[in-house]
Structures are given as structure tokens and as C-alpha cells.
Image (cartoon, rainbow, N blue to C red):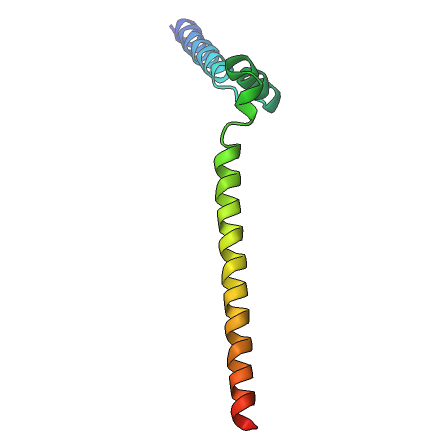
Length: 89
């Protein structure tokens, strides 16, 4: 009876270990090379540039607004200083 129980227990353990090994093999993390080749196969070279143009437009608008705000504030401060200097004279 003890040998049969030990044999049955080891069989369950082996099946559990085999299931865990199979599950681990199915859940491998993708590599960078695998993702790049997959993207190239699915979408071609254009897939690498998707999203680039909206990002460039957004950056351009942001940069333009920052320059305009800087120039506006710079001119406002210069005008305020010129007005104060003229009143002192």
C-alpha cells in the first residue's frame, strides 16, 4: 500500500511539473527582434512610421505656441520698462 501511494503521488507530481513546464513554454515574453519582424511582416516599412506625423504636428504646434508666448511676454516687459523710464524723465 505504501509503495502504491508513493507511485501514485509521484505520478501526480510529474504531471503537475509537466503541466507547469508546458504552461511556461506558452507564456514566453516576446523579444524585441520578434516584435520588429512581426511588425514588418504585418504592416511593412510604413508600420515603423505610424504615429510619427501626428506627433510631429503636435510638437510643432507646442513649440510655436511657446515661442509666441515668449516673444509676447518679452515685448510686453520691454514696453513696460520703456514706459516707466519715459515717466521718470
